[in-house]
Length: 127
Image 1 (cartoon, rainbow, N blue to C red):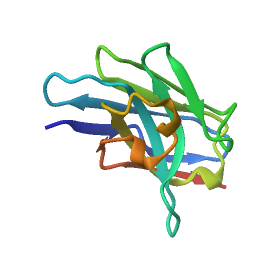
Image 2 (image 1 turned 45 degrees about the vertical axis):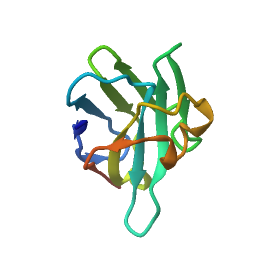
Image 3 (image 1 turned 180 degrees about the vertical axis):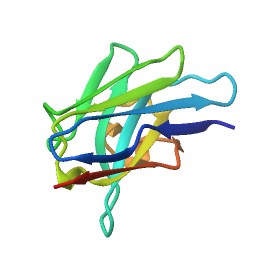
């Protein structure tokens, strides 16, 4: 069974940086894409960033463009999220997600585009 493990969350002051990591494990499997979502208290889970391994295309929510960078290594089934210029509104639980089967770029910004999820890591940005 596929498992995703996030790390790197924590408390940071506004304007600071954090790097989140996520590693997928659980046997041999194909990965079409990996992504990051976040969920703030009282809000729905929202898309943050995604990377499609074939071609290395990356996708970002408008709210994080220019501040966050997604990268990774498909062979290692590992994805990272470099977060710079953090704002208090970035405070949330950040979830890593794996898309093994969609083969569809159009769904990479949606929750339904992913079939496996991590348990999340808390990111808190103080003002």
